[in-house]
Figure 1: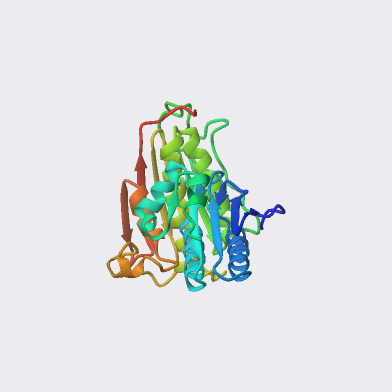
Figure 2: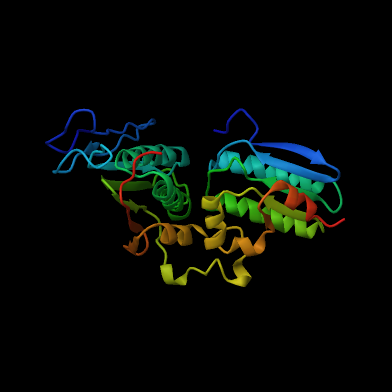
Length: 120
Length: 180
């Protein structure tokens, strides 16, 4: 069962949506599905969507969570948008490296660098 | 359902009780040997049979991880174990048994200081490990599934699939560490 708290919080800076994970683990199926739906809605809400995912609170994720992130990445590409990932802890980054998803996603050390990397 | 081992020692024997009639078939029993490890852990086996239910899979996962923590798995080794266990259980429940409630997943975890061996067996059709596409190849990179096996094999020291891919045996060995 999903937590009663939403699994992400969304803020905005200019035309960029910043999505922060509120749970330290992105594991639970229901949780992953809910995050996927939120990202999907954010991608659909405007043309050329710009999304920044902040992983600062994430300590653990699963291959199902990676699948959800890839799905969001595919959707955003289709919508001519841009996706950036930031603040990924070393252990989690290792998961991206093993799966070579560090090559698929645009990953930045911090939020400022990620924000600066969006193309106008 | 009873405790399988004869030399059960106080406090450390972990018996798992799962809701919905999914009590483990033999409970948990302690292996012969010294009950304390480097981190004050307790050697033993945890044995479960659960229906193909994700929630029950997580329940099993929590119990095995608690036993591993008591045996010196922290930090990196704990992370590795958790990710491999998550993937192994989800694989068996979702892909092996295809969430069929009539099919069971059998799990055995042998936990000792600095060493965890886990066996996960499902009742599905099995699979050919060598026929699984490489998820890291360029053409598969944007696919949304197929990474669980890679993660298991990356984070465990020894991994073996047998019984036509229905049974997974995996081992992680590490120097036990104190919780930081």
